[in-house]
Amino acid sequence: MKEKIFVYTPYSGSFYDKYLFNFVNNLNYKKIIVGSPFDLKIEFSENVNFIKFENLEYWSKSKDYKELDSVINFLDNCKIYRIHILRYSFENLFSIVKNHPKIHKFKISFGIFGHREILESSIRHNLFKNLIKTNCICSILVHSISKNHVPAGLSNYKKEIKVHFLSDPIYDDVDDYNFKNDVLENIEFLYFGTFYFGKGVDILIDAVDKVKTENYNLTIAGDASTANFNISELDFQKNINFINKYLTEKDVLNLFKKSNVVILPYRTTYENDTSGVLVQAALSNRLLIVPDIFPFNYVVNKYSLGVTFVPESSESLSKSIENMVFNYNSIYSRANFKNFISEITSWKEITVVI
Image (cartoon, rainbow, N blue to C red; front, side, top):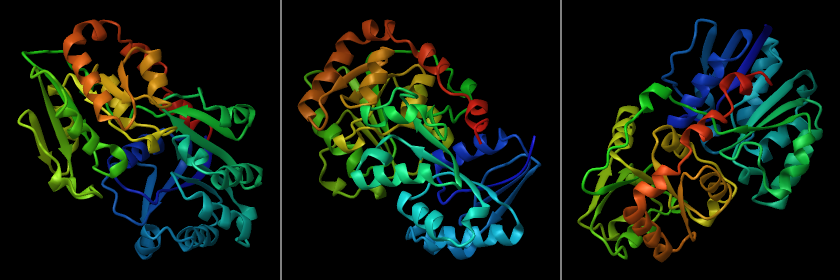
């Protein structure tokens, strides 16, 4: 068992908190300190201490390099030199590891969620290359629903000892999601989450207006205040159940339990991204409708988890909804939920590289 590690998270939220809980509780260290600018409502094991950096909240929200600079200085004073950062800005991290006068004392690992964080621009890709070459960087965890099947632009890194391509993990208690597949009179579709423009909620609502069948219902749930477009102008149809609230874990479980199909209407900006919701859907034995972009199309097609649609096309999405309504039993009979879930990287496999 290793001696001591400091785990820093500049984020707090449903998936981040669940990731942190599982990650920390599976680390093989005698002493673990977790730090964050925010209050974390997480029950850690006895060997975990939590430190709240109250003075860093402003710097964290503004994504200023002073946040990590302050953390490094604090750890140097405490003589703690092993640090894992849950997720962080490439630009700020690179600035710190290249310019902080005491960075040579540290061994730093950090997480990436989705290949898009590396590939979205040539500048970020170059930052990633240079971070790998930095002596203080010892391990980089790259999470994706496609695990180690990576886009061509990243294939060279599969031989890089510091880079670990891992699954977007199972965040939840598997037993909680052991639902039966009950189909009543109508197929029950579900979208839940935030309403940011890239999520494509407006595309989904427009698609519903084009669907040529009444044998379905759609629940759209989440905090609409996250919408960065005018959601009040959207035309909510009679067979749309709109739940505008922050969703608790119990709410999410109930939504999955009542659904048959989960829709991810994401825009093309989600290419090379990842999705904890997709993992939850598979865990719940719920079929999926996803955009025909990597890695969503790769995963859904490989494991027969549902159908795809032309991204950003409400017409194509409406046809996929119709296809699911008319052919649900046939599509469901081919789904390999268990195979997909069984190949997801375990928490022990994730933390062993830390």
